[in-house]
Amino acid sequence: MKSLAEAPEEEVLQLWSGLGYYSRARNLQKAARQVVAEFGGKFPQRREQILSLSGIGDYTASAIASIAFGERAAVLDGNVARVLARLGAIRGDLRETKKWQALHEEANRLLDRNAPGDWNQAVMELGATVCTPRAPQCLLCPVATHCEGRKLGIAETLPEAGKKQNSWKSIS
Image (cartoon, one colour):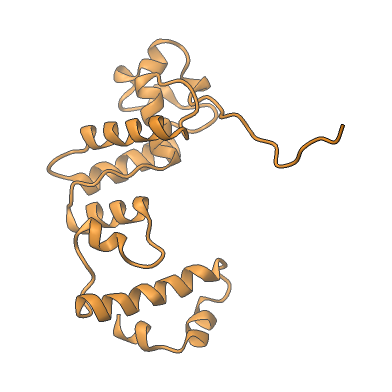
């Protein structure tokens, strides 16, 4: 952590070369500097502390806290939201604030108390490999018997696409 924090930015970027998203390398170094300055060089173990690090948002903080440190913090990304939407037969645009908050509450409710990191990884993997955006593999799904979307025959239509907004206005 200390080596990364003290390294010249040019060296960090050179080592990052070819990986793209150079802002991630800069944020990683900023976070390392924060860890050294604010946490004595020891990576923080609580979600709220992890969230304070540069470049780390809700999803990443929850993933790190649950997987690395066993904290009860549910992750919610597109894959997890899709799984939850199909399980609960939730219709509409999942990106709407109230729906996203409800999905996060449901993710926290379902989170395994004894192995939150394992649970988060399993749900992320389920959404990435089985409960895919197109042609979900319901026959292979370990939670198919609990899936309301499947029971209703609408799993493939969930989640419903949100309304796209035009970024330009037509000239009349």
